[in-house]
Amino acid sequence: MSIQQEKIKELVERRASARLGGGQKRIDAQHSKGKLTARERLGLLLDEGSFEEFDMFVQHRCTDFGMDASHTDGDGVVTGRGTIDGREVYVFAQDFTVNGGSLSKTMSEKICKVMDMAVTAGAPIIGLNDSGGARIQEGIDALAGYGEIFERNILASGVVPQISGIFGPCAGGAVYSPALTDFTLMIENTSYMFLTGPSVVKSVTGEVVDQEQLGGAAVHTSKSGVAQLSAHDEQEGIRTIKKLLSFLPQNNLGTAPERPTQDPVGRMDNSLNDIIPDNPNKAYDMYGVIASIVDDGDFLEIHKDFAKNIIVGFAHMGGRSVGIVANQPRVLAGCLDINASRKAARFVRFCDAFNIPLVSLVDVPGFLCGTHQEYGAIISNGAKLLYAYGEATVPKVTVTLRKSYGGAHIVMSCKQLRGDVNYAWPSANFAVMGAEGAVGIIYGKQLKAETDPEKSAALAEEKKREYNDLFCNPYQAAKKGYIEDIIEPRNTRFRVIRALESLSNKRQQIPAKKHDNLPL
Image (cartoon, rainbow, N blue to C red; front, side):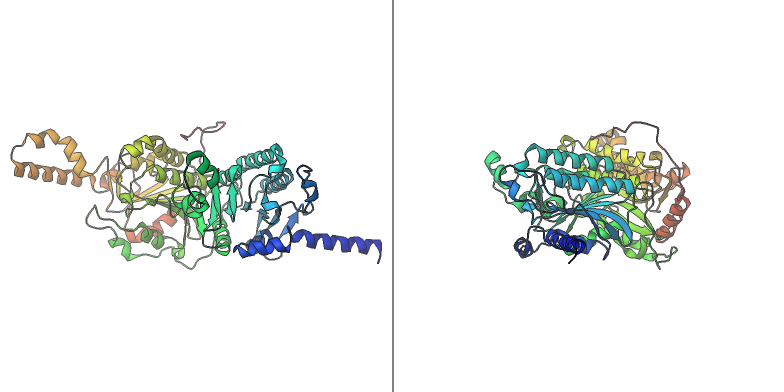
C-alpha cells in the first residue's frame, strides 16, 4: 500500500470514528430515550446528499480536570450547510453523546463560524439544541463562548431567519440563544428549557417541581410563550421546521418563495355571508374565516397555545406567503390583553423584517380591563403592537369583520397606522365603545333623573338604537375615507389577494435612525 493510500485509509477511518460521536454505547443510550442523534436529525432535516460538514476534526483545548484524556473529533456539535427543498441553509446540531453536548470554547467557535457563514451567504440558520449546558471544566472560556454565540444571534436578527429546535435539555445561559432567535420549537416530554433546574429552585425557594413542570414544552408554549411551536416527537418537529421554512425568504433582501396552487383566486365562500351571528355578543370561530380565504385552507399557526384570544401564523394567498393576524372572538371575546399584544407584536415585526405581507382580520371589542392587566403594564404591552404595525413597511391589508372599538381599533392596523388597504364587512362596527357603555356615559344623568323605571328603560333603548344606527355599520368610516370599501364577506379572498397584488411593489421607508426605541 502506498503512502497516499495509507493516508486516505486513515482519513476514512477518522471520519467514520468522528461520525460515531461519543461512541455506539452512548448512541444506544440516546435511542433508548426515544431521541435521535445529531447526525440522524440532520439527515431528516436536509435534502438527501446535500449536507457538507465543516470542522469535523476540531477538538477542545482544555487540559484541566482530566479533560486532556477526552478529546473527541467534532467536540460535541455537528456543523455545516445543506439544502431543504433545494434552498441553502446553514445548520448546527449539538451531539449529546459527546460530553453531554456541553458547550466548550471550541464548540462555540464552530457554531459562530457557521452562523457567520449563514449571514455572509444570506441563508437561514437552523440550530438543533441538545446540551447539558456550559462545560464546567472550562470555566469562563465556556461562558465567553456563549457570549460569542449570543452576539451572532443579535447581529443576524432581522438579516436571516433563525430557527431553534430544542431536542433535549437546554438550561442555564444556553436558553438565551433560542430566546434570541425568531422561532423556537420544542419536543413534548423530551425537551426542556430553564435558567435554573429543579434542585436549585428547591434549595432557594423550597418549591418542589420536576423538569417538565418547570420548563417542558407545554409550559413554554402555553404559559411563558418562550416557544412558538411544539411537536409530539422529533420526526414531527423536523417536519414542522421544514414547513415553517417554506413560508420564509432566504434573507431580509429577498421575498418568500411562491407556491403553486390550484385554488382559484376568485373562489367565493358563501358560508362567510352567514358566519357573523345576529347577536353581537355571540362568538364565532375565526379559524373558519382563515381557512376559507387562504390557499387550500392551509395555515401554519404560530404560538397556537399561547394567548389564544389572538391568532397569528403563515399561509399562502394566490401562491404568495402572508402573515395572518386575527382576533379570536371565541376566547375573551377577542379582547387584546398583555400576552396577546406581545405575541402579535413579535409576529408583526418578524413579517416586516422579512418582507412578508400582513393580512389582519379584526373583531376586537377593546383591551381587557382589570387590575391584573394594569399592574402588568397593559399600556406599554399594548403599545408594542401599535408600534409594530405603525413601523411596518410591508403591504398591510386589513379586513374588519365585526367589532372594532376604542384603542384596540387603532392598534389593529388601522388606516392611521399606515394601513394600505382597509376593508370592512357590512357587519363591521367602528366606535369608541359599544352602545351599552356609550349610552350609559352620554345619557347617564338623564336616565338617572327619570324616576319611572319603564320610561328610563325605554329611553335607554331608544338611545341605543340611535347609537347603533350611527356607529354600528361601516358607512360612517367609509364616508370619511377610513376604509377603502365595504365588501361582501364571501368575496374576501379575491379582494385581499387583489389588494396584495397591487401592493407587490410597495416602497415605503421610515425616517433614518440608529435604531428605534419601542416600549419594551
